[in-house]
Amino acid sequence: MSKKRFETAVVHEGYDAKEMLGSLSTPLFQTSTYEFQSAEHGERSFLGEEDGYIYTRLGNPTVQVLEKRIAELEGAETGLAFSSGMGAISAVLIALTKANDHVLCSSGLYGCTFGLLMMMKEKYNMTVDFSNFTSKEEIRSQIKKETACIYIETPINPTMQLVDLQLVAEVAKEFDIPVVVDNTFSSPYIQRPIELGCDVVVHSATKYLNGHGDVIAGLAVGKKEFLDKVAATTQKDIGAVLSPFDAWLLLRGMKTLPLRMDRHSDNAEKIVERMLKHDKISNVYYPKNGDGDIYKKQMKRGGGVISFEYKGDKKESQALLDRLSFVKVAVSLGDPETLIEHPATMTHAVIPEEERLKMGITDNLIRLSVGLEAWEDIWEDLEQALNN
Ligand code: LCS
Image 1: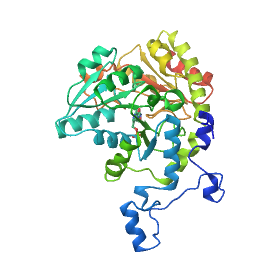
Image 2: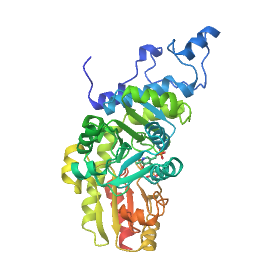
Image 3: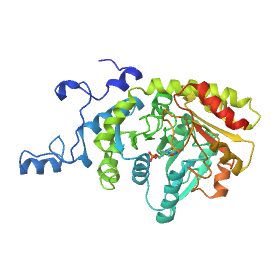
Image 4: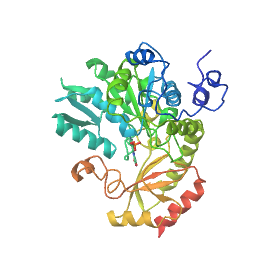
């Protein structure tokens, strides 16, 4: 059978109803363990001599459909599911590094990813540097003999700056260093890092992949050899595995990913056009309007997140949020509801002020996750809050 297009794969890939009594919808295997046919069968299962299931932390049929589906969508060999985005990120980073190693990161990171790296730095004497990844020379000059991996968010949460993934992957290959990309903000519908030469993709599937604001989940995809190691060590033994029910919800939510991403992007484009003309807004950050060349090279659409700087101080920026009516003041993103938050005091509050400002997270930066509502209603609510 020929390889299916994205919109088809997101509905069908990884599931064959014939193997599940014809059930058209993926069955929910809500079980923690599996009965062995005999003690010897159990022994052989633990030795890896038998296919099949042992215990849900080690594998579950519902979760495995999701793992196959995300691997196909990202163009990767294999996938693994976790109980949160941070579960996926920590399992991958801990598997790739050891004491005294160096990690080179994008110039901004989600607050908890930053926190995890700072903890690894302190506990394991690791070093962490940040790069703008603007040229091959710059990247080469920042790679050390202890560099264990390169870790990138693009677009960066919440500044929306972009990193040229192909450029980084080409330099990383020269040094044989794996490149890990957090693809949460784009989803594979918009950007596919593996096809650009990167090695591992991680997701907070809590966001666009699930798309309904009712699940916390993480995913990682990459080469089978590496992810088999993660599955047998940092996933299995640390244990941040996804529950079958949450995998089932994710499989359901993901089916509409292409429709939702187009709608989020259409809505965001309309809002950006108006924000650019509003005299209470000094800067608007949206992928399509920023690094034009990188955007064209690697992204299909701009996605649903816009950040902007309000002409006011911290208190006045917080007061703007309180004047909104149906737009919700909440962290997270990628939900059907439009969400707004203040990164300096919420998602990125754990980052010390000096580093936070270096990342471009000022006290008047506001992040908007544009939802699926009518864009006119979203803009009317924002406009009344901006004008009051
Ligand atoms: N990566 C990125 C880029 C994220 O934005 C988040 C969560 C994570 C990883 C962690 O995923 P989780 O464990 O929550 O599934 N970002 C959040 C945010 O910006 N607001 O609330 C959570």
